[in-house]
Length: 238
Image 1 (cartoon, rainbow, N blue to C red):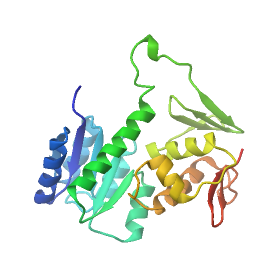
Image 2 (cartoon, rainbow, N blue to C red; image 1 turned 60 degrees about the vertical axis):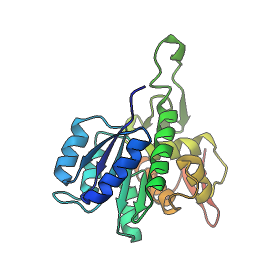
Image 3 (cartoon, rainbow, N blue to C red; image 1 turned 180 degrees about the horizontal axis):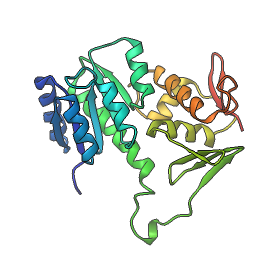
């Protein structure tokens, strides 16, 4: 089995090499880039299974890199930064990051996050990646009023027009749609969709719900698909 490929975009050489050493010790193939523009070029030209992306970089910052990556790729992206302000975390998650880690953090924690995100991504895309007749399945889909979710194809359409979603936006929408009329707390959704106990925070859920609403709802002020149940969480309305 080929090694999973990880791109680390980090301008602090000591941190980058420490991250690389721990990931390589756990069986990953790692590429390092320190310059933002060079990293973006590498990310768009080559195929990686996951990207670890620092925010503050020479040439181009991590937010701009993430925005460009998300135009064509939906692999897991973990943002790391010494900046602890909530606005930075919300911005990163809103642009499509799958996780946002603040420095300092332990290399073992980073490896755990990488493993968790890759395992979940692989589970969610495994059917589509199957080989041979034994893996062929009839495409499943959910139809809720004007919204269609093609599960195996990981495709969303609204009134016939395709809606582009990040990996976690799709995962969250699908989970809620498959469990309608049931209220889930932010903590429960963090566990069910992100599947990483004690990693991340509930702002991750809030940001992703907001992005989904912006993309699929005719009037964002009327939450006709994902409803907020104040003090409790969110509920998908059939």
